[in-house]
Image 1 (spheres, rainbow, N blue to C red):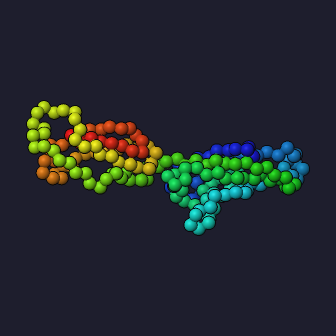
Image 2 (image 1 turned 180 degrees about the horizontal axis):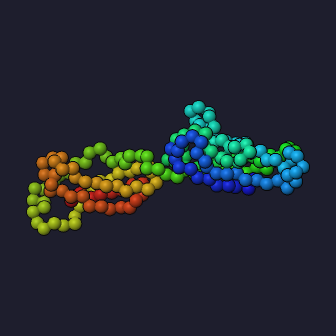
Image 3 (image 1 turned 60 degrees about the vertical axis):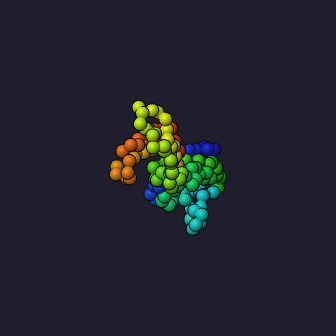
Length: 181
């Protein structure tokens, strides 16, 4: 096989999800028996921490690398390195590494960095024309790679709820901020 190959699979995918195809060739004449017939194996697999079960499997004749367990988590391990071997019928072999990257799925809930924010506002605040001044910055985090956070003041959430507004700041990353006015 090539020295380095790449595959990608979505995190939290099912068992038997195709990751990559390992391909090798043998210069022996295919008509000369088993010397040119290739068999694929995994020499160094990644094992699940809890059970010791292998995370990946390979088709011995096809070279198709697949997940052997479900629910790989990108936030825990974003990529894996698997050492694969292609052997011919004459006992010769070649090795390569498959780098398996996990693509992100929005599988984590955003978390506010604080459970509760307290703010004292002078009673004369807000009696003039509206300004762009912020009273409070709310911050949230989410380990998923791409996030779009949406904030709102919950209708009827307390006396004076309708005197506040939320304006956006930040980008589509793992953290976000909003300003309360």
